[in-house]
Image (cartoon, rainbow over all chains, first blue to last red; front, top):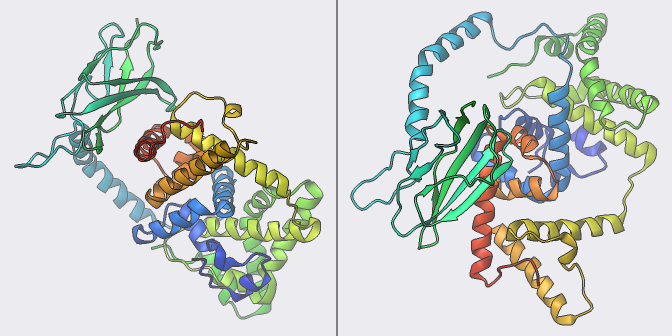
Length: 208
Length: 218
């Protein structure tokens, strides 16, 4: 932890760098460049160190709101940008198919293997539904109880239901807004204490 | 993999003093707004910001640009992000040297107590006013129970994966919004943050429930 390339920087700081994340680690965190094999170490330190968390939050905010530099240097040559764009356009249908495959929560059932995700039946992901006909349906997981969670597009909770059933309707007391997008998912709590979940899905409410 | 920006390489590799001065001026022109932006995050007012800015540039230049020479283009971050972190740290050092490090032990202690109580309330899922969660008590048994609650919660949190512990710390200790957390931790949407927090707190409730703890009220 706190590896520093600069003895100059270490010597002059009032706080020992050995006890905090290095500037390199913090910059990597802000830019999303921390390698998977280092993530556990970094997260463990951040979880315990309010100082580094504050520095990460402040640094992220500065970068996020920073004016663009005057530098004309681009890390990517134009040809590289064009090549990357072509790759994305070609791969996009495949990527969408993969995403949809996962979003449909296909059960990875093999002989004797338990489902690893709640299989949602309705409403379809991304569908537009009438508020009067909105009904949540999912597949039963033997012996499990369920928790349905509905949130608005900002993630603020709209409704949550604990049930042993595999269908649910929003009660009249829950106000949903026409033309608005919502997210939802289902958790299944199994009798052995483990739980599985559906991937978050979204739906839109049809305008009246 | 990202390489060292050309203007930085020019600054660090040029041998002639005049060329180095020119390269330094170019570097400042390119990055002065960013450095100022970083400095303003810790400065108290305009004069402080200008003093801190001058200090940061002085330190970046010191010892033949020793700090800038520590930048390694390892592909994990952009140079500008690294510069923001370094500039902010230098500015903070400057402010501390000028104003000293202010600590309110009482506030820290009270805040720590508040955070633990808030955690207990949020993790228990009960709709309880913070004021009803005892921080201290004159009743010895209740004090013991409170200490047990704290210890149980800490132990339960320690069983979580580091990423989940970090998520709880950002949400419940630092009070960041799901939107802020989503951007800092690179979640797809704030909703994914809520989803993960929901799953983690459900896990903690099960762990605490298995230990006979069903409520935040001692």
